[in-house]
Length: 412
Image (cartoon, rainbow, N blue to C red; front, side, top):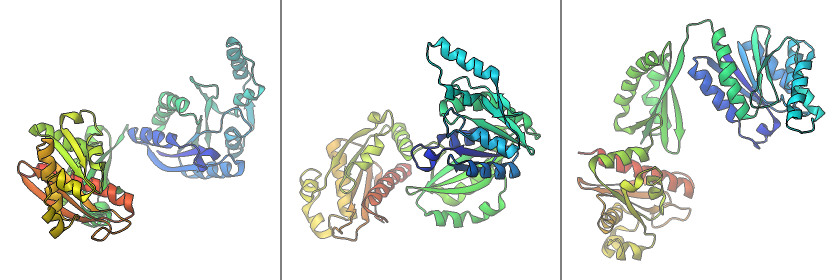
């Protein structure tokens, strides 16, 4: 079954309200194995609404509309649906009476504008709203079921779960099915490079499918399977998961909701180790991320923000000759900073960052960042050339530093 969603509201187009309903509905459709074809947003304009509804009806089996069924003059979803269906609006006397009764019980004056909510397209079936006064409705238009729900999320969720999704599943002529996705998180390659490496899998694998998403230096690979049961879908995904991991190796660091911070924290706990940071250009960004998860106090010892060269020397014990001969922005300085933080803070592992975040170059080209990690098993240092403005350089470097920690912890 092909399903579309249509959100009504000029406030959505203006960015005054975030359309969280769209993602919530998308999740429910995927969980039910229904094909979500398209999401559309239109403002409170009758002509545009009718056009969007008519186009969706022509190409879909079901259309879920959110918004525009309240009591104000700009709530015209019911009018637009009726126009597309070619039917008049029907006034539900009983529903109007029930509304008046509910207001009287609360000892409140009844606004006559509420009566707009008693209208619906002739022939439409009411979708009860247990959390609000605006009922939804469903009506079949040219073989497509149109289902209208309130835009208020708290009202929409209940109606969607209790009434709309069971109805749509009952219409689906196929066997009950599910859509399951697994997201692999990778670091260390560009989106283009990952895409080229997995190009044949992307083009030849139809179920499961392969998709890519870049986010702050992390490339996510989404594997999605459609099957009768969750276990069947996972079984379809597994061989593709193995193929992707075999090609990307240790660039794959997590799956689904796992984060690099959680992975490092768990790895440290397993070893009984603690960690500390010494940061120059990032000034605490790495420490902030390491301490962003609950329980981080079990593994995190502390952080030293050492921007000035004399602080690197006096506090972290970096040799003045290293700075003079190798430079502040160098792998040698980063390693010395890491050793100093490890000793000073009594940690098993230390990660250090020094660099030129820009926009003005410091010794070297802006975007040149050095990261070093020291563990009981050894040390490593690497120089990165980060793109973008100052904040992007700092953000990407914090991510790179965490991954250098991950790689160091995974080394024998």
